[in-house]
Image 1 (tube, rainbow, N blue to C red):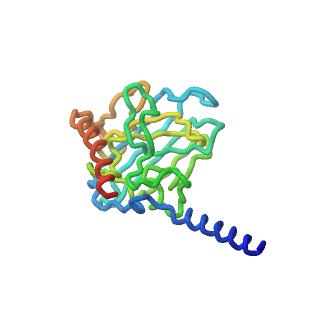
Image 2 (spheres, rainbow, N blue to C red):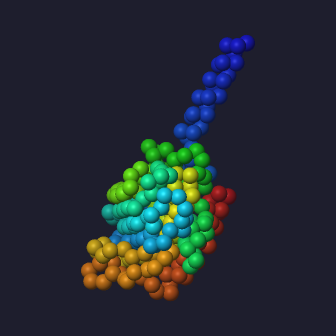
Length: 245
């Protein structure tokens, strides 16, 4: 009887491990994006003032996430840089969130992670299987932050700069968190034009600096960009629902 119980418990344990390893979204794994517009780029730059003002913060975390269409339009090339990171509360994480930062700078209003395949946050992302993770879980797929300054370059095949699809993120936001998921700061992605040599300007809460000039990126501020934000936020959930049927 005891041997039988041990065998049963072992089988349950193995099943649980296998289930975790096979975690995927309700709509399956994320798919590779192959039709990103060549040359398109966006940037999200953290503001001067933090959303969360307690703990070991000394001003706000500084930094930006620059995202450009990958070679031949496949996936996205990311350049991530953060500094002035708190000395406590890590490892720090950052994600693309589904909604933009509102005018009052409330990072809670950015809602959940970008997750068009309905994977959910638990269990944690397995970085060896990035297609099985939430599309917006960048630090889960490519590394959490464990130092007072951080920079990284990586290629993500699953995010999109094609309007109207669930993995599109140019109308969304980046959120920087403590390890316990408390939101420290956030910023909207802003569409850019140029060769990528200009310094990013804050695109979240707090004071916004001047727009870069010369050979660098120029921030697109046309009213059409605002319309596209509303349009894509409305389209993405509907598409996910149709795919689930």
